[in-house]
Image (cartoon, rainbow, N blue to C red):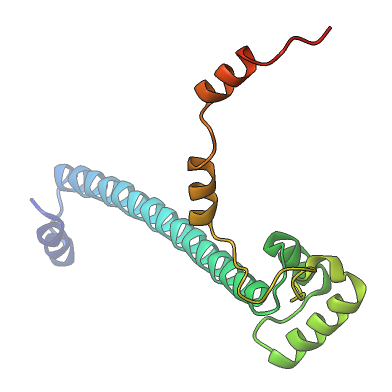
Length: 156
């Protein structure tokens, strides 16, 4: 007999001892099922809270990285530490600008600055990685250097 039939029988006042035992067994089963569902719900809440925290941390990290790029700050991790320590609201442009100005005067070491090229380097004197590869390829090989050393005069 199912729960609804037992309840209807109880309302009519015709429950036997066997029906009472069955009703108690159904109640225990329902309690176990409810407890299992509560546990699953608690686990889902913990998982959802963890995901929210991870998302917030990721979004904060992304804002700090963007701020570091905007202000040419060389160490985003250190910038994150400073933002946290000084409790800077990253969504407030005025506060971040004032924070930037303060850092630029306190620790200019962490900011990239545009410098003119050195003496003798013209405007068109740009060195790229491809130039470096070509320069290495044009150098004498190790075998060629070994031959030169073999034919070098001895030093007494």
